[in-house]
Image 1 (cartoon, rainbow, N blue to C red):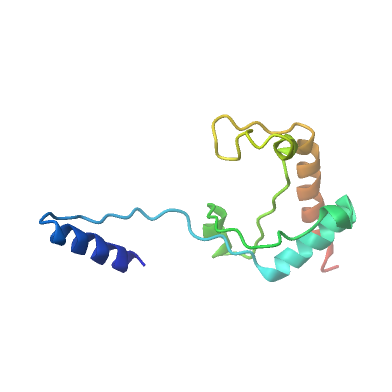
Image 2 (cartoon, helix red, strand yellow; image 1 turned 90 degrees about the vertical axis):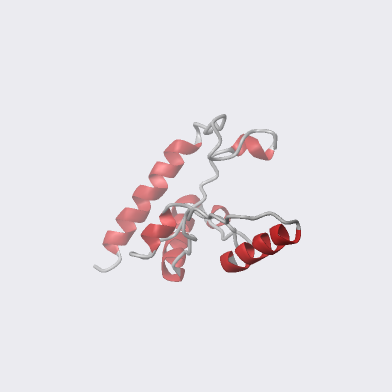
Length: 127
């Protein structure tokens, strides 16, 4: 893809008697969830939150996070806790990674407890 973008840019510029320099900064690596970790976290979340609150997103996200680099070294899973409950009612509320983003404070204890339960279940699973 990157090679092709450079070829296209240079070709278009040559057609208009100018030049192009294609520079691409590498961003985040793709975040690829480990299937076994997905199953593990879904089971833990279903026990802790109830099955109706532990579900996979119906389609893949085309997102990158810094966790993608970690997941190349160790298996992991990116969890969406839903810390913007008000966003469902008001789509104008900024999303994550926006300076105006505000966490719904009621979700913080749930997120912490979910992560703690995942850790405890992880250490109990091989006993």
